[in-house]
Amino acid sequence: MTAPPKNDDAILDRPEVCQAIFHPRREWGDPVVTDKDHLIPVAPDVKIGARFHMASPSAANILFFHGNGEIVSDYEELGPLYNRVGINFMVADYRGYGRSGGTPTVSAMLADSHRILDYARTWLADNGHNGPLVVMGRSLGSAPALELAAAHGDTIAGLIIESGFAMATPLLRLLGVDTNRIGFTEGKGFGNLDKVAHYTGPTLIIHAEHDHIIPFTDGQALFEASAADRKRLVRIDGANHNDIFYVGMATYMQAIADFMQAIGKGA
Image (cartoon, rainbow, N blue to C red; front, side, top):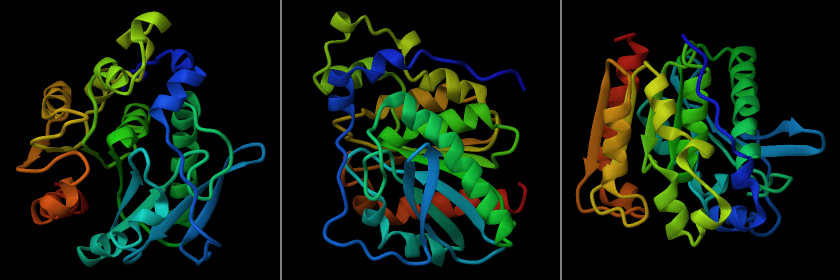
């Protein structure tokens, strides 16, 4: 496999851009730490919070990067839904979110994703979990998921993108960033289309029909750019960006269960 595309993320680390992209939220009250909780070292004095919902050692694994404004604990009720269909579900935060230290930036989010993947792989191996590992990202989380797929495509068993963005410029403008003033172009940003075109493994794209933040056309663009031989685009009819799971839960979970089952069989 050729080297993955590299992008200049520094332009997106400007304070006015980070304030528009990231909305970190801490956990309420005094967090209860269980054996599912992990603090993953990503930099000196910076650890990222994660929670691993494990079904069984032989189950396939999803490493999940959530959307903006969400935190790991928001998925406390959803983790068991994945477990019921035989999937280990591992959710990671970003800097400044949940229990994590540090301040979020685009370059840190993408760099941290590699360390989170390394940690997850090591933990799985050390604890006797031998199922395949899939990366998944929702909304903002599509960026680290695609980053990992492009860089580690030979060892990642599959890619799932939910409500992911293809082009950053329209999203940044929607968030109030003057892309012309800061000199932003797609070549200086996330490069999600280039990254999905670099990954050839099994790919599942899920997107809401009426997404008002990241239009369904972004999901279509990611699907069309995907270099995967086995790929699928699932539209959640009647859903929007923030209710996609609850409106289309049955379709959403069936698509993921089918995808993971096929990967588990090596199909």
